[in-house]
Length: 232
Image 1: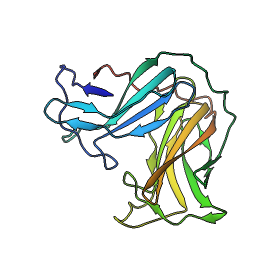
Image 2: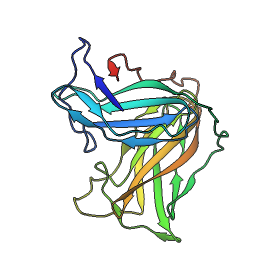
Image 3: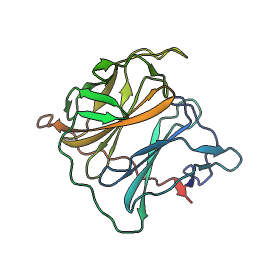
Image 4: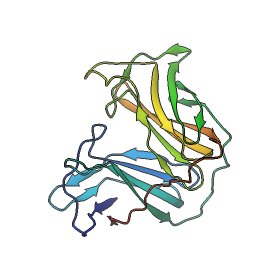
């Protein structure tokens, strides 16, 4: 997969700031919330083209998110998105009920906390193995875990921020990792937690409902479409 991000004048963007230890985060997920992936493409600094090895493993409609921040004082973090259609027989997954516990590679990950529209809440993921707390979480993208949250249906992208001090290089932590998250509207959200143990990154997934925030609940805030992103 390759793509180029261009500025409003159509010039390829060449300089990026490091955010969570990377210049760009690429998130890919199918419309039903399946086949989530979080990868970090390589930049050709001469042309502005990002590329990464890629295989579409199933048919369907996918959303691709590029999360980045242009270099330079005053630049803001941006999330651009494109929709990709993958040909073939699409078999959608059965709609998920709420789920706050996931099992992955022998680890159990439990998510605590609630979401209310328009209100910042703390979400805490706790990692255990065989009933024992995992204290060997390794730093990953500037924290002991990285959380992505998408609104079910339109897959609007939420910005979620890790809480607590940054990890010490070479250090370990655990078993809990906390994040501050704000749901723009009531509804169902799909959450994906990346965590690293023994140099391997695992992804746990959750399904959480956000309660209404009252009569002044904000209007939906989906991610901006990639009006300034050129795909190849």
